[in-house]
Length: 316
Image 1 (cartoon, rainbow, N blue to C red):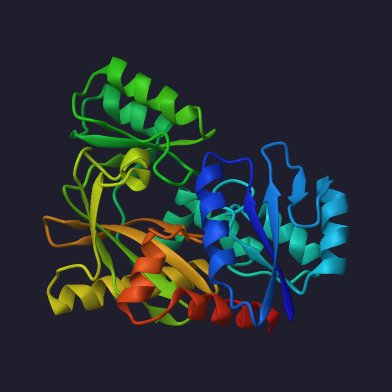
Image 2 (tube, rainbow, N blue to C red; image 1 turned 180 degrees about the vertical axis):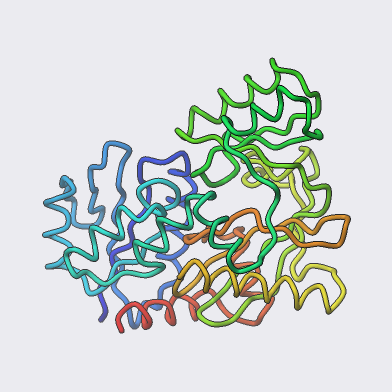
């Protein structure tokens, strides 16, 4: 039996999403092949080894992990899980783990770092400024609204605002909201179009999903995790040429950032027919209703088969 430690929880705003991802991983591991060891990391970075009834600090937990497991499955989202910190810790201690390495994770969670790479690869993304550089343009009234204000390094659309009215008050309010979640605030041109997301599994781009929020203006945290708040259509009802293009871009972004095993890239299909990359998720949601499992299913890949392949890759 292969002993798999499933790490979930963590200090980020996506704590509960991560717990649900971890539970779904545990429920879909083949019982004849894997022995799951659930580990919940709380917001104070205490590691709770659930079945073993142990609570350890980070240093103790790493020593213990080396003794009790063959591989770590990372179901951690957001800070600590997707920013390269946990990956660097596992690499340093020569513990095998699923997902991207510390370098790719550090790039993937940082939108500005990702955009620099996309620029080199000639991959389109919305015109983006830091708050300081944008404010100079704003004062000269040389910017067209609406705009999007967002944290530089958060997932699940936390801290994101769309501003339609070009007033100083609305801008400052949105920036302060984003600052609660990140030291660096980004401002992007609002791209009018359709939200699309496409996962990558090993070397294959999956079938993309078209996202249609039903209650909110965009795919925010509420829309992502409230039943019935969003219509998610997989595969996306697009022309074959557009589907190919979306999948090609997802694979290109995955490789450019240096991801391994899996990822999911979020995009906007603009009404100008161009495709703009918003971000890459190095550890996308893996709950029962998450987008990556939906896309795997659309490609005829069972979630248990996906987990089996990912663990095999990590063990290599």
